[in-house]
Image (cartoon, rainbow, N blue to C red; front, side, top):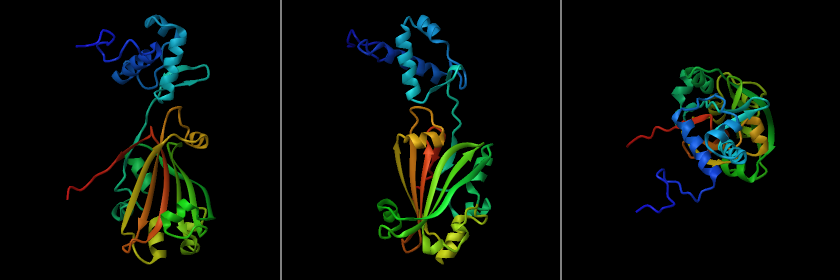
Length: 263
């Protein structure tokens, strides 16, 4: 038997008014009552429509902003954010046949297939000492000299990912990987040539967290949007790591797709 305080929609009258209003507005957005990019009614109109105070409306809108559902611009009111996620076939993107098919530019080719224009902006290419974390990824002593390639992946000139790749410096110092320029034949192909054997497999480690202020700025994230960190380590047939790729994805701009064999 339902408690007298329970509502038919599962919420209770004990919930604060702004929480109830935020849930109501979130459900309206999910139903399509407010379309992506559409401006929400002014606070005074929402207050009148839902018989709520302006303070309650502001708190509800603040909650939706923190969840990344709505945004605001100077003098433009509040609007429903327009998500434009890309689909990432996570298990397939670095496969040898995909690299050959796409002339090495797998990111750009995948974005083109989805109707956008992808490019990579190289931020820096420089030697760095291995930290405790990068040393663990590449199975080398802390302090070992590594080469770091740092870049931003953009879709239609909007930043979607930050990507830092690490290699043992002595292995790649005389290759195109060490140059401050795109690697036309593909970084992984050059890496395999320098290493003298092909990449056998990759291991991914995914984690989810809120971004730092610097990451929020770099990826132009709305309040409340999380980031997905993917550490992908490339191994040869003897389980020796030869590349560590530290990738940071905007949580609202990606759908990660994994195809898992049944055998």
